[in-house]
Image (cartoon, rainbow, N blue to C red; front, side):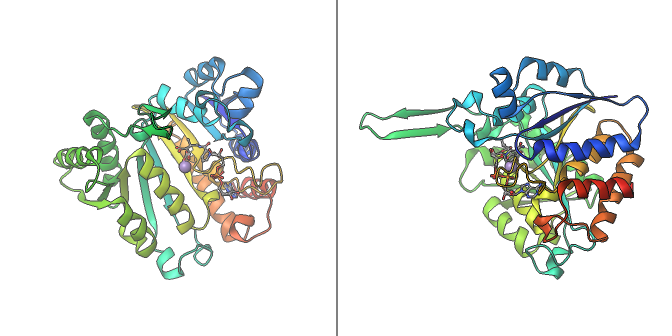
Length: 347
Ligand code: NAD
Ligand code: IPM
Ligand code: MN
């Protein structure tokens, strides 16, 4: 069992260190961790945010544990050299098309979200975000028009096979949960979304037990705050899923809690917190590592088939929170390492 560990930039190394401590504490036989450079750190060392040797490590591993990438000192680089290209490149190169982002309220946090307790405690949802297409990967450019105005553009598109495979991911996830699937799009305006909706409806014929509904993304953003308990599984495109998942994270308390799995066909996957490199708190022992620790749990479950060990990690995180171990993101004072210690102790 070989796990690639790509810590990246900002708080990435800090939160990844704690997740690695948790994995090592489990003392799994035959587990090998291999580090690789990504993001701004890789750019400064190798001249590229996703060097060939990092891709080689990824390809020869069973799964990837990823921290975060992003460094404002790289904001003026050509786009293909910016840190974010590391995560986008890994998702695309490795065919990681299905991004699972679960959100639920941990016991003890009901009063710490930005929603009222009675609303917050109803949340137990899963966002299934498409990760290989949409406006993220369409043709893009910047030019100066004849009249001197600058114009930027990014093509939004989905081919039907791309929608079909993520729709299957959404329905399959719903079958393992509450059997409700909400497909989120903007079909009232976008052709991309009209195709999305048509294909999701076609695929639904194969899942008669799943109750399918459709929602426009603007309404979905509102409903997530108004009545989040109505959602079981949400399936949506790359951009809408990015935005809605950050929103969902605050509905359950903090972006420092939301883990994710980015899956290819088969068992291979990349696991990362949904948050970024948080330059405002980097290097200060202020980041909450729980999202990354929970991502390591998802890794054990999905890529290595170690359900019991995954559940142990999740229980340890839940116990730490119930015992009042909270970082600044949740109004507490525990530092990154202290939170790691607390989870390790409770394993
Ligand atoms: P961000 O998620 O890094 O931070 C947003 C806010 O949440 C900040 O106030 C930050 O301090 C806080 N925060 C994030 N993670 C936290 C944690 N674990 N504990 C406590 N607080 C936390 O988003 P941003 O500021 O918009 O982006 C910063 C950089 O990260 C950018 O370069 C962006 O491109 C990059 N980014 C990378 C990823 C990724 O690697 N997958 C994801 C999102 C953003
Ligand atoms: C995320 C991030 C990335 C995305 C960025 C860093 C490319 O926001 O993983 O949610 O937009 O997918
Ligand atoms: Mn995001």
